[in-house]
Amino acid sequence: MAKHVVGTVAEIPPGSRKIVVLEGRSIGVFNVKGSFYALRNACPHQSGPLCQGRIIGLLRASDPTHLELSREGEIIRCPWHGWEFDITNGRSVFNPHRLRVRSYEVTIEPDGEDPSIETYPVTVERGRVVVHV
Image 1 (cartoon, rainbow, N blue to C red):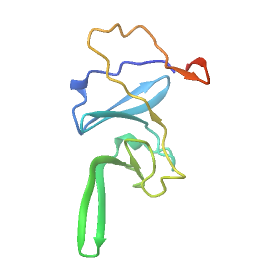
Image 2: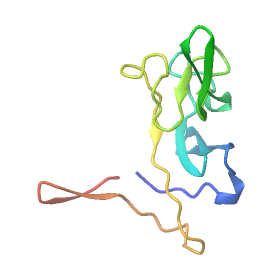
Image 3: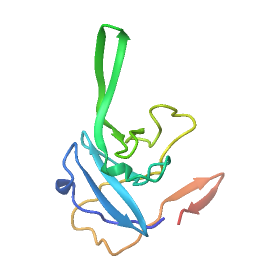
Image 4: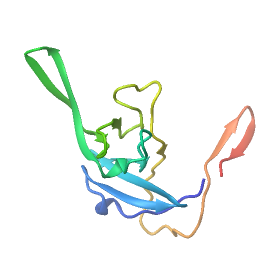
C-alpha cells in the first residue's frame, strides 16, 4: 500500500471533495467537518461515479410529524440511481451490514515532508512485525 500526496488541507475545505486517480483507481477524498476520508469512485450498484454525487445528511423521523436532519455532510448519494453511502466508512445507508464501497486510509502529514519517499504501514501481530504493501 503506497502513500500518495493528493494535495494540501487548504485545497479540500470542510464540506468539499477532491477526486484523484491513484494507481489506476478513481478515488474521492472528502473533508467531513475537518476529518478526511477517501472512497472508491465507483458505486457497487452499476459502477456509477459515486464521489461526484451530492453530499447530504440523513432525514430521521421520530414519528410521522417530526423530521430531523442528522449526520449532515456525512452521506454521499450516487448521481446515477441514488444509492447512499456513509463517507466515513463506506457502508450503505440502506444495508450497512452487507453493502459497502471501498474506503481508504487518509492521513495529514506535516508541511515540508518529502512526498517522494514511500512509506508503508507496519503492525505487530502475535510478536511479528508486518509491513503492509
